Length: 466
Image (cartoon, rainbow, N blue to C red):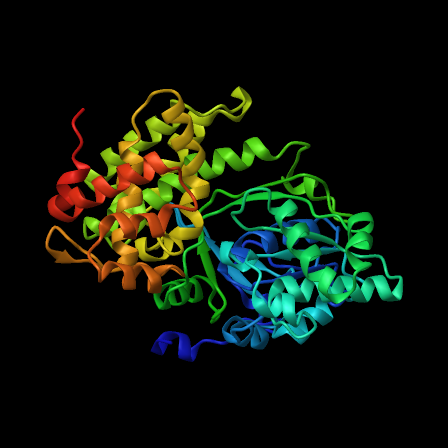
């Protein structure tokens, strides 16, 4: 903290009345929470918790017991503040006062705390933000599910308790960027349930609902400068503050019991697939492209990459390639959505780093580009821009020098084996190892050729001819 924040009072229930904010939570925060959340990062505090705060301000109590399975950091920030914190929306030319959120009423850490929250009689909705890799089953999930610390195992054990006690189970909703996330979550939980009790999967099938969701709000990691700025605006020290953009959306396949989410802007739909596709293809995919191209261009943030003259032209052409083959309902306005996404990426007030957005590409790229690559190849159209992005990811995840220069790498669960393969200097084998599970053979071969060019040409590869 700076000298200024060290002399300010801390945001809490006691000091809330002194907060310089347009309005503060005045609803009852002492009643039992109806939502339990696993994965207490910045995103959920700027998204789910804001919707819940909206509901509570309407008199529709939607309090949250939030847990992190591993890190104590956020709980340590929020607990001394009675779990009050501010959300600051940052847009070019606008700096509105931060909004104090009160919907999270407890923040705890560890599987035991999560199990207690998920299994509470008052819990009607369980939500998760555990990232794409959080849906991979571990050996412990399958061999020792009663002891596994994973989110999937904790959810399964909570449902087993409901089954054994006759308690009504909560609805379980993923808020992660995964296609058919409700279907995938049900499948993973059922696999673990089979190991706990062979009769449990059938009960889960009949009694538990797993809606799918598409959520959208860009929420960068909070910096020390953000803390100082928000604290100055509030007039109170807020170590749990988050910054975000103005845009937020949530699409869900069914409404949670006792939580009238549609009243606060959540879109309840029967078919969520077009919404998933629109986001994956026209927001998440270009986001990944900006990250990798930005690193190549020496950019630190997504906003810098969005405004780089070569990177911006390349990514806009990639978006045009996507729009050329997407089959989305007209009412979803895919072109307008894509152009708005590109504008959002350029928001200099957000500090999303290229390295952070580019992490875990092995999980993300097949979902974000796989079906588009297939559609373009079936239509006889080239896929060069997608091969370039894939080649960039392979190089960055493998630690290869590009254009003779060593680049900042990206974190990825596949990096250790890719770095080992890269030592053998066999690009074909390396690319096949990286992409063979997510893309078809002809495209993988194109990526091999593209990677060879990338390593020689560097930024020159992005300067495609009109």
